[in-house]
Image 1 (spheres, rainbow, N blue to C red):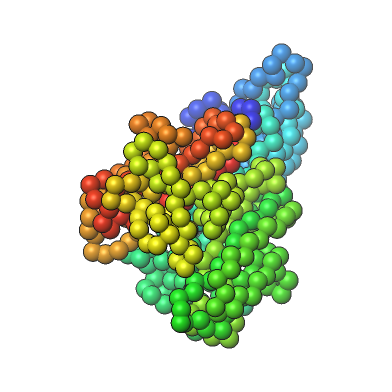
Image 2 (cartoon, rainbow, N blue to C red):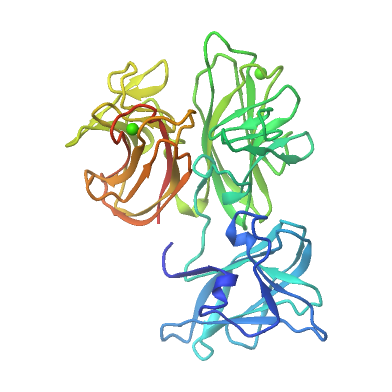
Length: 478
Ligand SMILES: [Ca+2]
Ligand SMILES: [Ca+2]
């Protein structure tokens, strides 16, 4: 983000510098309904008699100029109930208010305003927000105020994988031919399944499997606000000879329009090709959906398919996804696959059969797969992103041990290291042998020069047994 940004959940902001003028407000509520705290928390303005709007004010500088433009992004809705119409008005001079929202929502649905421009005058020195006053209950979830246009951060379905529905705006669903229905988490295996047990269709960290019915597993993303986006990624079928089946269709679908997908690929049962997709520009408004569907074709046998999606704002430029950029070429997509021997990095060699990078091209660890790494007996497993230009980057992702019960071994260290600075990692976490937590990675403001490397490293701790660890991330310039 360029320039200054103010961003907060309103329940917090009301005790900060954004001052509520109206007293009759309730805050919070809906906790654990929507795991995204930006949406799960809200302030509520109920109708008074006579009804008047709630007002917030925040002091903002014009830098000595007669006026200055700020941009306001916000969302309204209630995770548990239908509300509204939510009436939001903004002013930068305290007298003229412009209506930026006047829309109703159903339970756990949200409407948003993106980059509403407000000219703040030097004389007023404040931005004011009015909520309600329209004789109905209004909710406000969050406000983001920026000096520059606010854009959507890159979101990858792999790096966003979680044990919560709707975290990072993704849901794990199936398409029944008419609508999306939620899958349910099987916590021990971290798979989303039809019944919370083992029934397909199911969605794993980066693979889908259809069931015997026509229900299609679908990774569903709901736009948090209006924007123009690009959707990038790939799909590839899991092939485990001699079992092939009759193939699958992979479709990228907007707003449930399966008849006219944004992108479609048929993959025959024995096809091991990586199929990339890059669809843009896609104009979205808050509430629009983008989903990746897996259709079983004739039957569902041997139909497991891996995939990756990165959704980002057009204005963000490139987003480099570790799993999304995985390839069979060193350096392709700015990613390479290496080992660290305690003093230097050396390249791994591709095993073309297993599509795994290994020490010698056979199976000797250290190894790096699409999103899993196994350290060696004496060397670390390393996935490397190389900066194409000088700038400041953010790294968002997660690390978690591969579930392989019963828990055994002595754990691993996961480190994110710039160049060879092993001693002072940007991020470090010890994952013990029985720790299956999915640790979120969120690094901001890392300065890089062209050619600098960001290295995702898995270290064996004492020994390498049972040390397979998944690490995934998206890198983007600010
Ligand atoms: Ca099939
Ligand atoms: Ca170990």
